[in-house]
Length: 232
Image (cartoon, rainbow, N blue to C red; front, side, top):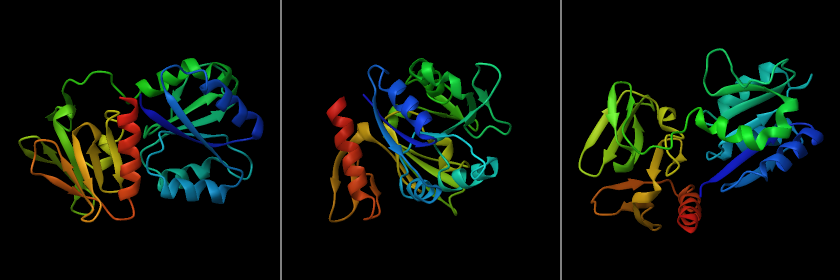
């Protein structure tokens, strides 16, 4: 069971509706973070790299121009803008980039819509995926790290290494077990054998490959790994 982390920046009424609705979602553990100021909200987005969804209700003081600041601090989470749409569809914003709008009145059914929101970028299949013309098998990936000023990625498999000209954001939420540890590294939680805290590296099962993790994020990875193994 994956743990989903939600950041909610909205009115008290809307925040309570979101929390109450998502507690009804079956077979998923959901953690809520709520904020009463723009400053606290942006600070958390900057330091928390494992947020899955951001619910934001625009106001006069935080209008749509605020969206660029949200995306600046978190480039991977789905952003759900709660607005006064006249229909009950979930809309992909112009330009994509995992930004959606939905009618605030739909929150009463958010437990049902939650899986729809997940399905926009997640797939239940562990079969191959194709990214920028390259065929990948997610279960075989040990880790993915960036190079060349974060513009390209090195994908390390069980038996080979591939280079792909895509930013790391392309692989965010590809699978539940592929998690982003910091701004330059995604690891496969299924493949971790141990975490060496003294050397700040991750060792993988049946492999000589290791991934380096910054000392500031090594404990974060430990918590992600322990929570993952607790639920699987």
